[in-house]
Length: 138
Length: 149
Image (cartoon, rainbow over all chains, first blue to last red):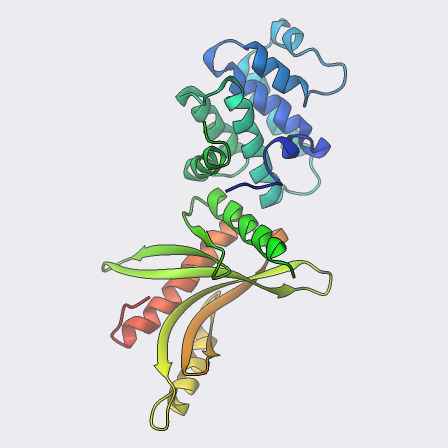
């Protein structure tokens, strides 16, 4: 089912950019490295003048710091995220995970982890993944 | 409202359902999103969600509903006054749902339903409402010795 409010367009939402960036980086690092397609995808939602590769190479950076920054973004909001926004975030994160052509089980696990931060149970994330696959057949 | 807008609303309903972990499908021709629930005692209940209007500030309203009984209209049939009073009494006790009668040309249908503003509908509320409506409708059906819906 194609949803015009999801996917690529959703990634352009500036209010959700931090979630896409830190969540996307966490997911992209699930296999231990960033490939060119993932860096390119992340760069589109990164804050201005951000060098994704430099962030990852910075001393003290680890995968968990992405989750921390993701959580800080949630805590900083004055209004709780609506269902539409939560769906956009999960859908957008799946889009990052799929940047290299497939979504690995390790990436699904990380989507579940971020879904948990957003109050979305794993079965909910899996159903959004099913929607994504319907919208973007291989 | 255009068919496209109607469909967008149903897709948004499908997105919230997905976040709640509930499987369902948009039925474009019927104009609703449909889900099926397995209840205790091997009973089942269908719950539908349809667009039902707008608030004064143009926010979309959706209605969760589940049919419980269909009564054919006729000279000696139809919904009796006692049944209607019974539904009124039930409405005083049922939580997060209400009973109502949808009148068709040839039949009346008793449904359990609840309304929500789509923009502020959380996955948690969505799931709770779907279950409450399903349980309310199924309880009524069960008391009438049926499990048709």
